[in-house]
Length: 91
Image (cartoon, rainbow, N blue to C red; front, side, top):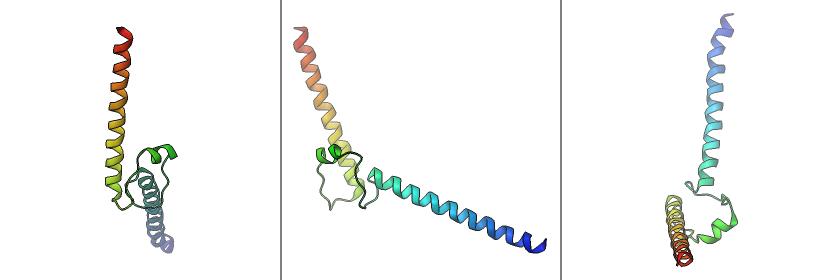
């Protein structure tokens, strides 16, 4: 019983280390998909990549900011076009 009690702590420690490793790998994968970590991750859609050309030498967080700004500009343009169509149809 004494040997089992001493090894129980090691088994728990190894289990915690394995769980920590799994969390690290999953977090890294998610961060690559979001574009926060550099790497060879693929964008979610090809259309998103084609609509936002970004210099490959730009750090990954800056790419995410630039994509967000491009999306914001696109949404504003669409809102203006929709407002013009609404105004034209009411006249």
